Length: 433
Image (cartoon, rainbow, N blue to C red):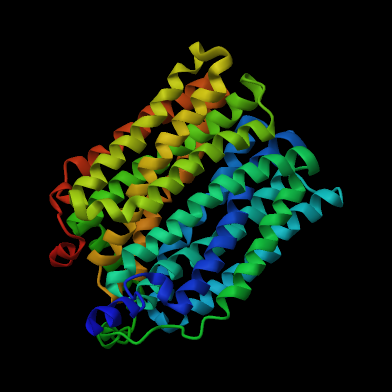
């Protein structure tokens, strides 16, 4: 009887919430992602409505936002791995820098000096800091929590980000409608400042792990060798390679899909900012459901199988927009349904994909491998945005949206014809060559 009582009284340690520093990291991530979700809708609306930008100019804005993933990812990945004990400092510095840069956008509008070209420069500079933050964050989290807490930690962060899609983009639509787009962008800037203050409260910069002993000094002239090592592992690991192909294909066509959808909704369907925000909010609801329950289904049905099925669900859902031409008054309901289903599938898949990548890659290479991963996968975004802008300008917003939706559906093939579906437990990924 005594033993049972003591067992019940023991606090749970298998959840990441038991880690005080993780809670601080989670808070910073939560506030930061909320601001980013607000800006995700507010920035293109600011360009379209406030600055009267054309379809091609909105496409170039997305190019400027994601071009840093092509230009800065590899060198910043090497930087993060070389100074692995500074990862938290990099994250704090990136947040402070993004606060200062994003704040320039509403200030420029209110002072009457803002132009679309102004947005390109500011968004590009902030994008470089976003690359630094995300690479450092990806490499830092596994050292902050235990391995058995990693999926739970990623699930909580992903669920929070999905919840922010619900509140962030919906709030962005309301703010833009009630107080103009520059005010919504200012909210994003303040969120970065709050995130930096939360991250500064973390008491450790790198938890002591056995893997640290494996990190060797960088040989002279080894920067290029380090960069190639990250690319080689990303392309050589059978699990990471499949996820990389899927993510690259998804990001390429998703940019076309979102750009075409935004233009078609505003200029084709006559939707206002609040209505568009409601559509993205529906996607956030689905993502939250998927991310929150994602870690609970893998043990029951197998890690790789769950990942494949949820990718099929999330990546095929956008094809539903092809019915918009026949939806009439039900167009809003159809869009919301598409985004809910898409969010559920991708929400579950993302939790498992990130955890799989973190497990399959040795700690000493995580920064470089993640940099290579983002170089290729996120580097597809400016390409997709540029192509989407050209297609929308010459063939119309509907064509860009439809091409993007069909392309997203093909992304699942990378995982379907790989070793991922045969993976039963995430721990088995550590034996991958």
